[in-house]
Image (cartoon, rainbow, N blue to C red):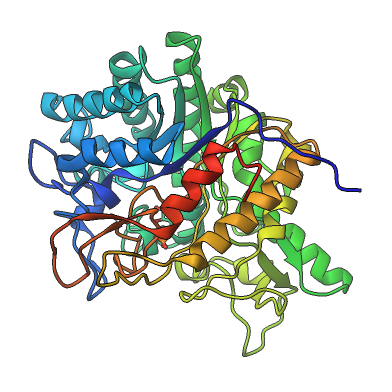
Length: 469
Ligand code: BG6
């Protein structure tokens, strides 16, 4: 017999975006440059000076989200828009922009869910060593304080750092978290930066609870479990290594303030333990997230490491001389289809991941990202028939529903992305939105918005609270 599973009545159906990927106005209106504006763009990808012009069109965009019935909108604040140099002088125009955006959400009964840091380090702080500088902890806390004081009367849900694990593992691809030229122990440098982010996050969570007792705050890592490629016991160990390095390190630190033992010993073996300042562990232990923001895209499948051609080391790019090779090797999973951009599609892995997270941490989960990057076609009569995206989202929502049936406490679903935006390194040709934007990687286009088929489908899902998919 099939049991009926229901989404909570106050479930946050919505979607997500990030500042640099949608706003544009990246070097105007008082905004200082960020690491995204100074990075070298891969050839043939749209630059970020216009993005999809959300900065000037946010009212129209929020109205479209309201038309879909959104209960929440997760967006990020650009640090260098409000603090052009990352610290010190404030850009009032930037502060006002987010204030207006928040008001616009509230006007439409959309809960604003604010990410404080989404891949865009102020360039001025990059020049001071970015997260590699111990002072970065204080820079972030001061920035957090400004946000809590300015928006805390209206914003109840906060996310600290988006996908810190991906920054640590592949930050070079994303364009943030850079390793200085000539660094001898790359792993140590990367995990030192990672440690600073963890302490900064912990202090920001504590400050949030002090200043805003009713607010809720959480980390937002990208979590997806690793499967063992076979029943060979060595592959089970490799999967544990991958899970520890990719996933649990970040949640163990955010929730318990403790370094995962597999990661700790792995770092120690490479002489790469971070320098820890007195008081760090205290801050880490004192900070408690109220829920967990989770981005989920795809699982990984791993086998034991053997020096052999034909296998790919996951996350190799940033870790060339890091010893990650000894821990696991990523392999294709023949049970899983792939997107046009080569990402495996695994809705059941979504359920498995949610179960695993909840049984480890027992905190409610807010999905802060999930979604399909694909080529879309605008037809002559102004339609986008994105049934592939509908399928992707439907199967993932089905599995999330089953996870609720498994006893996992879910707060909401905010897939990527509300509106088409510039992807991290594959331009706007890789689209994610419910709302299509007329521009491509070569030209800015009319920037006119169109409702995709998925727009109308999601509108229906929200209207019946996920009963009919
Ligand atoms: C997440 C990020 O990693 O995935 C987003 O938080 C990103 O910023 C999204 O856009 C999709 O990845 P990509 O590389 O296709 O843009």
